[in-house]
Structure formats: structure tokens, C-alpha cells
Length: 196
Length: 196
DNA sequence: GCTTTTTGTCAGTATATACTTACAAAATCT
DNA sequence: AGATTTTGTAAGTATATACTGACAAAAAGC
Image 1 (cartoon, each protein chain N blue to C red):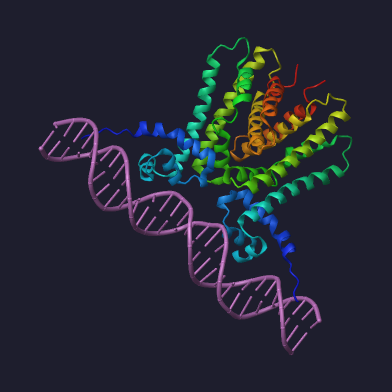
Image 2 (tube, each protein chain N blue to C red):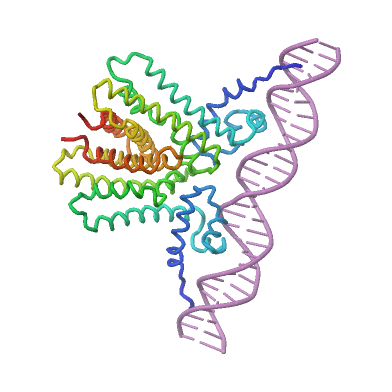
């Protein structure tokens, strides 16, 4: 027996590149050749780390959601200077929305495949994402003595807000300033839940 | 000279099928062979009606936006029984959202191509779509003596709402009832613009 | 040093798919 | 009827791309 495998470590190293590529090009346009090129390795090696292209995409989905929530967690652990977590996340997202290409991965998964496993992973990740936001909204409304009505729906609306901000940016229809206001103003409206 | 061409008519006939296919399968997975199969014609004939696959997609984009706005126009021309156009559109969308596959075409265009022409068409259509909604919102707020603040942003949020409702449906995360409430309740919040 | 396993390089294969060509049949005009 | 153009059918091509196999070099254990 000899030479311990560095597979898991290698996977961890390459995953950011792989995920960024999928986010940038989508599923079909991301060829395994292109992935190899960007990773600066041979195509072959990718197939030693993952069984097939689909597995690379699944790993990318999980990575991109993990990266986003991790960043948020870290943000929330810092000093909030009196603001609720929901307010701080909103402020952060108004500046950094779409940075991980999360929504682009979702688009790719939805539009380019009908693979049940991809759907399942997407569903699980997106569901967790929603829960995270919903919980922050609930906490916010409790903290500010607002009527806690249906934070679940509001959380979906917040996700929709981020999504449309990204689409607006990609199509050059909403500039940076407007996007900031979009997320800040409408986001505020959504987390407050319409006064009272 | 003989036999007048029925090209434009034929195009009009096939476009719904073409658009539905693109919406269903996305850009890459929609093969020209599959298009021909669904249109019940030979692949060849498609290429006599449009110069290439991209042109078919462009036509599909325009069709799907036209179909959506046309439906809405017709809806608004009917008797509204005292409700504002914005309220009626919301009520309609809470039942029929995503029917034309409009958002799916957008996803496909954004994620599967980086073609400038596709982007441009998408941008134009999406922009018009937004203007339409924004104008309804403005009218609504005027009619109900609400503060007319930034209906432009609210209109984007409404589009985001529809988008997330569709994603939620596709991933099986938001059932029909919740989607109806999502669009009705949050939509109401958005068109009113936070009271006053 | 020898064995074993991993790693890197290169070339190859099988298939899918956008798009074309060739040609016969049918329809419309004069 | 004859000329001309559009339609329908079938086969073909060239390329892109997911995935594989062969093999040498290097690293780790004995």
C-alpha cells in the first residue's frame, strides 16, 4: 500500500472554479474540456474526482449554497450595532447580490436538465435557503413587535426580489443604484410585512 | 411566377409549438429534430421558415411576450367590477402564473446563451413587460389616492414575485394554494406600496 | 531498492446534432 | 397546358463533446 489519495482535498480546491464555470456558462455550455482548462488540469483527472459531469454539477450546487449561507452566517456573527439580522442581510445583499452565482445555478438546473437527481438537490438546497430567510424574518418581526403574519410567504418574496435584481442586472435593465434601492426599499417593505 | 408562399402563415401556425418546446426544454435541449417532430414536419422545413435555430428562438421569445401581454390586454378590456387593472391582473396571475412559459424562456436565454442578439431581444421584451406592469401600478395608486412612490421598483418586485412562484412550483416547494396566497397577499402589499 | 498506488499527458471513440443537398410531387400563375 | 415556384421526403456531413484507455513518471510504504 502506498501514496495516500488527495482526492477529497483536490475536490475542495477545484470546486470553486467548477461552480463559477457552471454559474457563468450554464450546464450545457460548460463542457468538460472547458472545466479542465479552467482548472488547469487534464479532462481525465476531473473524471477521477467525479464519476460524470452531472456529479460535478451536483457538487457545484451544494458548494454554491453552502458558500452563500456560510457568508451570511459569518456576517450575522459580527456586531450588528442594534440592527436585526434581517436588516443586516438586506443591507449586505443590496451590495453583493448574486455574487456566488447561486441564482444562475438554479436557472441552469431548472432550464437545462430534467434529471430527477438534480431537481432533488436543487429542491433541498433552495428549500433550506428559504427556511433560513424565513427564520430571520420571523426573528425580525418578533424583535420589532410586528405582526408576525406569514413570514413564510414574505421569505419567498425576498428570494424573488434577489432573483429579479440579478436578471435586471444581467439584461442591463436595472443599474447598480436602482438595484440597491430595489433590495433596500422593497426588501424593507417585505420584512416589515406591511406595517402594524 | 406561381404558387404564392405561405411562409408567414406557416410560421404563425408553428410558433406556439416552437415556443412551448423551448419553454419546456430550454435552448440546448431543444434540438431541431425535436422541434420538427413536435411540429409534425421535416427538419428541413423549419430551415426554410427560419435561417437557423437562433432565429427560431428569437421568434419564440417575441411570441411568448406578445401572447402574455395580449392576454392581459384582453383581460383589462373586460368589465372590472370596480377593481383596478392592477388588482385584476394580480387576481388573474395568482391563478394562471407561468402559463406561457415566459419566465422559462428568460431562464433559457440567460443561462444557455451569451449571444448578443438574444440578449438584446430579451432585454427589449423584458423591459416592455416591466413598463406595462409599472404603468398599471401607477394607475392603481393614482386611483386609490395612494402615495405613488416608485412604482418602478415595485413593478420589478412584482415580476420577481411571479418568478419565484414559478420556481417554487417547479421545484415542488410551494403548492398551488400557497402560490395563490403568495401572489395575492404579497402582490397586494407591493401594489399598495406600504400603506399611506 | 522494490512494489504499489496515485498522478499527469495524450490520443481516441462513439454519439448527438445543427445544418445541407438532391429530388420528386403538387400547386398556382399565364 | 406549360412554366415556375413552393412543398414534402430522405439521406448525408461536419463538428462538438462526454467519456475512456494506454502509459510513463512520481510518490509513499516496505
